[in-house]
Length: 497
Length: 122
Image (cartoon, rainbow over all chains, first blue to last red; front, side, top):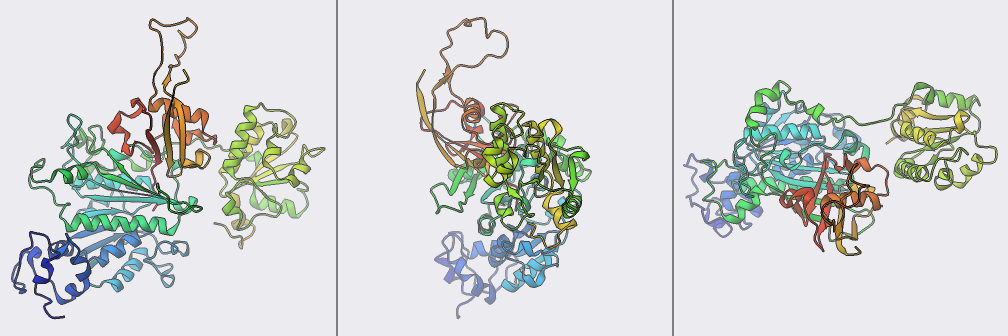
C-alpha cells in the first residue's frame, strides 16, 4: 500500500492529459487534487481501465447526479453510481418499500418494508460506499418542484415509471441544460437512450440540410405519448427483475461514461464544434436507442439487443425546436403549462356498462351461496398466469385477448341468434362448459370477471354483440371490480396479483 | 403484378403480441401497388395516366400488415386513423424512420422494418 499518493501509478491507464502532482493537496482545482488513501484503494480497479485514469475519477468525485425514481431502474443504477464514487448523489422518490418491489428493487431490504424508498436506498448505498454525499428527496417530482430538484445537479437519470413524469423531466432538463439518461422497462423489454447531451440551449442547433446539429430531447424521440390504455405499467403487466436491472445498470454505465469523460460539460461557446472529434460528434447528436427483448422460452437470440440510430434535435420539437422558447419555460411549467397529465391521458374508449348489466362481487357471492344463481357459466378473462394463482370456484379461463380475437372472428362470419355466438362458444370454451350451453342450456346466464373490472365489461359487450344473449333471454353480467373486488368484498385470503 | 420483394418485419416492446406473438416475420410483399382512390373517380375507368403502380412505402406496409397479419382485433394498439399510433417508433434498417422519409420511404428488397412500442415502466 505504499505509493498511494504517488500519481505515477495512474499514468499507464490515465488519459494523455494527465497532469502529475506531487501528492500534496496544494491545488484548489478539484480536478487536480490528490486522491485520499481511501479513494485510491476503493477506486483503483476502475481507474486503471484505459481512458479512465485519475482525471476521470476526479471528474466523478466532483460530479452531482440526480436519480429520479428509487425502483427497478433506480436501485441498480444507484448502486453503480455510488460504487463508482460520484461525489453527490440525489435520490427522488415519494413511495415506501413494498414486498412486491423486492424481486427487482435490490437496493431495498425486507427489514425496510414500509419505510421511504429514498432513505432505504441511501441506507444500502452508504453501506456500499460511505464516501459520496447522499441527498434524500422523499417526494414525487412534480411540475412545481422539478426545476428546484434538478438545478443543483450535473446529470439526471430518469428511472420513473410513467409517461407524464418522463415528459416533465425531459422538458426541465432541456430548460436547465442537463444531460438525461433515460431508461424504461416493462414485462420482458427494456429501452435506454442518452438525451440532451451535450445540452444545447433551447431552440438552437436546429438541423440544417439534413445534418443534425444538436442532441435530441425525449420529445424529439418520442413526440407523443401512447394512448393511456396502451401504456403498460409494471404493476399491471409484470416485470422481470433482471430485465429492468440490466437497463438500470446500463443507465449508470452511460452516466459514468459521460461524467468521467466530461461529455456533459456545456461547451464554452455554443455551436462551436471545432474541437470535437467527428465520430464523437455524430455519436452524441444522434444517440443510440438500445432495446432489449427478453424471451422466457428462448436462449439469448441475435435480436435480444438492438442498437438503433435515432435522429438529432428536431425543428418541430415542442420543447427544444423552432420557437420553443416562447412555449416552454420554467415559469410556465410551474404554473401548470403544459399540462403533463392531460397530455398523457388521451381518452380511451372503454366500455361502461349500465348498472343493470352488472353485479357486485359481494352480491354475486351471496346469490350463489343462497342458491339464487344456480347453473351458470363464469368466465374469467385474466391472463393465464394470473388465473393460475387462484380463481372463483367453477370459473373457466378465457384470456381477454383470446376472447376478443375469437369474438372478432365470429362476428366476421356473421352473428347468429342461436346463443352460441356463431361458433364462438365452440372455439373458445372448454368442453365441460360447452356441454352445458347447448341443448336447453341456451339461456344459461354468463358472468364475466376480470382483474379489476374493465376488461369484463368489454367482454360482456362483445358477447352480446355476438347475439349470445338470445334477444335478452340469457343474462350476461359483469362482476364489478373484478377479482380485486372479490378479494376486498368476499375472500380476503384470495391471492390477488 | 406478381412481382414481390422479400423483407423482414420485426415487432418489439410488446407489439409482437398483436402479430401471433412472433417477433420476426419474413415476408414477401408486392413490389408495386396501385393506390385505391377514395370516393369519386373509382367507377369512372382509368385516370389520365396508366396506373402501373407505385413502389411500396411504409404507409402501404402498415396497411398490409393490418390486413394480412394482425391476428389480434385490437388494431388500435398499432394504428390510429390510418397511421402508426403515437408511442410506436418505426426503424428502417435500424435507423429512426425520420432519417429515411417516414411513411413515404420506398421499401427495398432485403429491408428490415422494426416497430417498437415505447416503454414507460421502471
